[in-house]
Image (cartoon, rainbow, N blue to C red):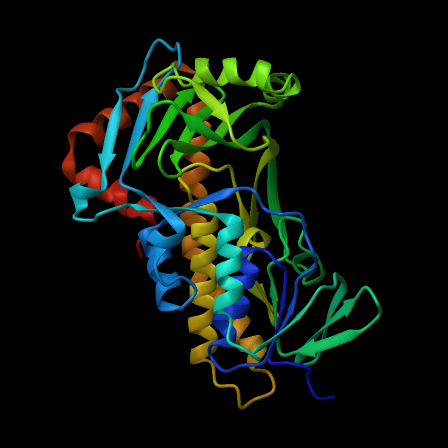
Length: 385
């Protein structure tokens, strides 16, 4: 039976839409299965390699038109621990860049990705997938209305609970943390400019990310019951907590958006591709929002997938099998390396043992004083390859 498309992309988030648009730009026929979802009120700090990919792919023309430059990162150890790290400032100018990256509203990125998709190249359907199976050289997905669609390559961008990953038999390792993240938008009395500021507390960082003028996006990681308690009373209880956590460095604070709380966990996969299925974004990896790696890693997934598909000869009917195999091989190192770095960093922030505190403080002193080590840290943090 003739396939319905060259590739079917399952998932309507940023990674799924970037994959659908990027693959369609190769001249392939794409079916994008993107069920309606609530508005994504989060923001994403994208490092320069990710921004460069978006520019090359035509997904974003001018980041300054829709985002806010991240020119510096300031880390403040706010723990009461015996061994404390020094306050550390990392500036993009140290490595000859105007910015480490850009902070974007996810909803704005979604709009831009949709606008950049080639006209007529993507068949978008607002339907969930209920099943997936391999039928020889093609993958077959079943929709909620019973429709079955087939393509040589199936891209799973359907999140942490990915049906495509499960049906493809790809195993995962998962760990749930006691911590959650509270996110919202703030108006500060004093601006933070282009500096992302991280206050490191025993249960995780309290981070203010530049959002233009006097605005900042907050990501507060703490034990869930503490966040719920602060949120429960509305502005009357939340604002005093935010003032205390920010050490009143930026004067009065106002809420300019509702606050949302997300549980934190890690997820890694045995392989990012198998038997004609390729996983991108949170279908393949998830971890706490430390070091701005989540969507950056997802866009590296997409970049590698587009390159692999472009280089794969599609004259044979089993080309999807070869593409998924090559994609898995290419992504293995990056996924393992980034997952290990982020997990180790997050756990080091939570560690109460004196040896761990000493190692972490010593590491930040080394980053503060040794230029060569700082440059290596910049390279890892920005996802350079």
